[in-house]
Length: 98
Length: 440
Image (cartoon, rainbow over all chains, first blue to last red; front, side, top):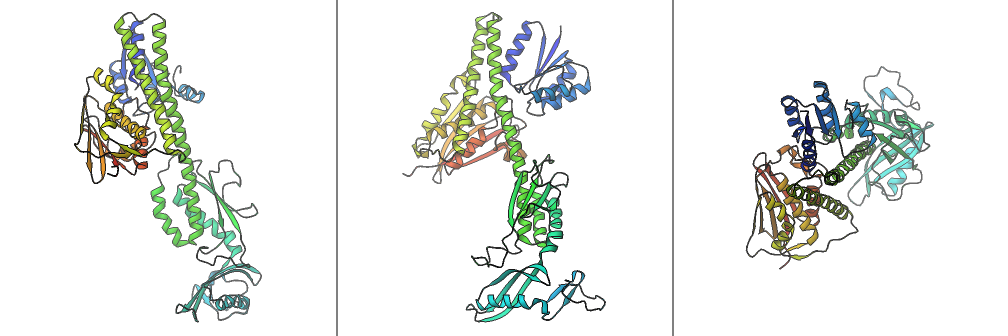
């Protein structure tokens, strides 16, 4: 069963996302900050990362760069910032879609 | 008359001796006879200073002299001490030296660039192109080698009123942490150069830094507000789509999602209120309506909105109001909003703890509203920063907007009150809002 790691600090958004993904048959873990995301990335070994850009402890861009450096797991950026510049910056760090 | 040996003016004949001293002394050289008469006219008028422009040997000078008298009636002249500044030399050399020193104060050379532009738009010193687009601060300064506030109200007719401009850009500067260093070093420059011009340049450098910092705060504002507005909207849309697609199977799930919608609506409302309050409290044309209010009633009003949230999450709220507490002189909406923000913070930063206390006590003519949580706390080094707009602590959970404490601080200030925060990481935070009591 494919595993998805959600890195998002907003609990409401996580709740609705997780419920939907669980219904679709994914295994889901959730990290509210970059530190926990890194730990789960290693232990949970996700097949896909959904990454928020605004985290309390590290910017999503930086975390994305770190995760990218560590492996080939696809990253999709979740962002309330729909600006073109944000999307480009996300893709530049190696996100697969944003 | 004294002149620097290594820069002897052309209108003074050299001694022809080997230079022993850095300064040469001449008694009444003929070239300064006109200067002397001009100073004597100010002495006759009992002026304290003599300032004017004059040519000496075909070179333009600005003369600044202090006239000292015996006694307060200025009957007898004691002595005259002054300097003549070679304006052409100053134009060619002085500003470049000063700029280099200012660059040292203001930051690295590649981060800050400056230009001094004369009254005809020509660049006198610096590297910044005149009228460059990245210019972030400009300041006009009078080309005066003295403090104009010390001299007579009416400037003498023979003192040219030149006004030059200094421009600065901090376009290449990623950080703005050098202000403290600058303050210390600025004293050195003041000692080294003519104080006013240097100060003007430093002030300009600071202004450049400030506008760049303001621009960065604005960018943060847009990012924060966009995020804070759009995140709840994303949740609301996702909930709606989930329901529309028939993915909600049980009544229990439906109730859960309805709860999410209510919670997100509250968040949006608080954000909108905070933004409105912030523009209201920063807009001086809008005034508060200060009236006497019962502190207990204000607390009750503020916690009203949290009752359901607290009940659902098993939170306990311990409210205590001291007996015989005086009324506060306050704007009701503002204080309720302040308490609303403080309680919201306390709940959000509670971590695993499930109790929040609100105490109202009176002392020294003011009422203290204390909001106490047993949560994650704020690190000492972050305490000053969290009161500013859009700054959230490292331990902050996701759904804050970084506006709350800035608003509360502002409201406290507007009430001639105060906001105190004491915190310990891991054991909780106490925020105290002090508001003056109403006159009995």
